[in-house]
Amino acid sequence: MEKPLNITFRGLDGTPELKQMIENRAARLERHCDYIIGCDIVVELQQKAMRSGSNYRVRIDITFPPGHEVVAEYSDNDTDGPVPLNAAIQRAFANAEKQLDKLVDKQHGHVKRHPQQASAEVLPKSFEPDR
Image 1 (tube, rainbow, N blue to C red):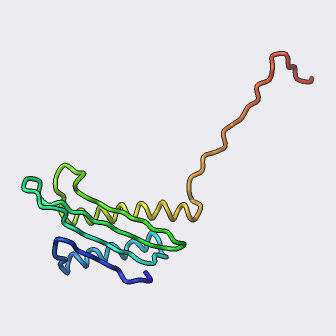
Image 2: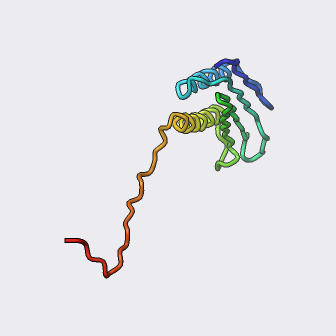
Image 3: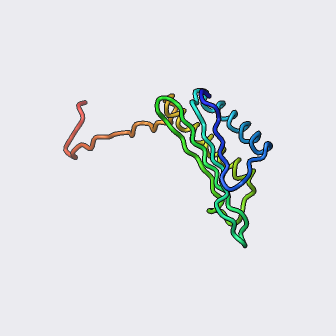
């Protein structure tokens, strides 16, 4: 990456172990796209619900040439219950990797193309081929 990794924590403390895990996952993104310019990651505690536990939101913003940006996020608001922070981070990075793979395949022209549809010409009943 050309720019240093930017990690922001909102509503929770970023432990050194947590920062290291995020840095390792961000380094793995370069396996999917080796020309990443920068990566901004926001990990936030959205709210503390009394019954459902903590709701985490992880947003990953990746920029790379020519002026493209991939934004992947994971929020455990959509799940049935609270998800541990480590799992939320892993799921956000998995989403980012899938999006990167799709965009890189598209840039390199590896997108599956559908074969041409077979065409036929309907001839009138009175047509008789030359013999």
